[in-house]
Image (cartoon, rainbow, N blue to C red; front, side):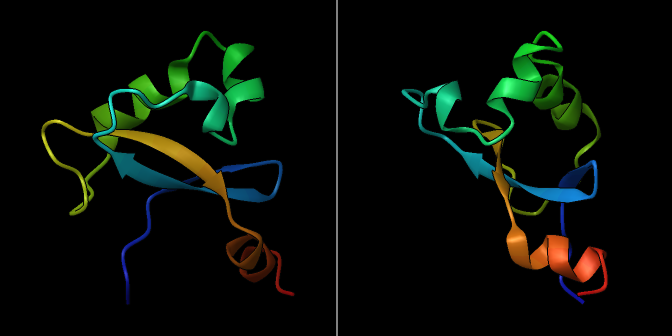
Length: 76
């Protein structure tokens, strides 16, 4: 089984995508609006607990909504 690192919020799955792109804009992250309400804690906290083979020392995560994973989680 493939390993998955994601956050589930209100039944929606947001998959962690690792990037080394330093010019990355937080507005590109699908959790940007939610994250702004919580002082950008999602990325910072996620890096502390993530055990992800795609992670590199110079990378950081952003999150993408996944309809297919959300459907699987909700039994559709």
